[in-house]
Length: 169
Image (cartoon, rainbow, N blue to C red; front, side):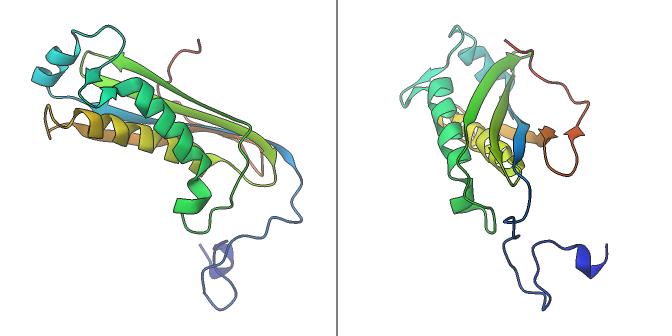
C-alpha cells in the first residue's frame, strides 16, 4: 500500500479524521459477530437456566444486549478518528451453540456519509465483554474469540463474509 492510501493520515503523516463532507449520503449497514466460550463445567451450570443466565449481577444476556447497544452508539467517543454517528437501528442477538458458546451478533444501520462497521464491531465486542464480566465469578477460563465483520453494505463496496450467521428471526 502506498502512502497516499492511508486515509487517516494527513500529507505530513499525522493522524486525521477522514473528511466525509463531499461523500454522497447512502444507506449503510454492518453486521459483526463475537463468540464467548465457556469451560465445560461452567457451561453445565449455565445450562440449568432456560434462555438466560442469571448471576448475582443480574440477567446476563439482557444486560449484555443493553451494553452492546450503548457501546455501538458511543463508538465515536472510544475509537480514535471514528466519526460520531447517529445510528438509526442497532440490534444485538445472542444464541447458545454447542452448549459452551454464546454467539453474539450486532446489526447496525443508518443513512449517512460513512460506514458503520466499527459500530457493529464495538457493539458485538462490548456485549461479549459484558457476558464475560457477569460470568467471571464462575471461571476466568471464559474466552472471547472470533470478533469479526460479517457484512457491510453501502459506500464504495459491499463486503459479505461466508462465516456462520445466526438465523434471522
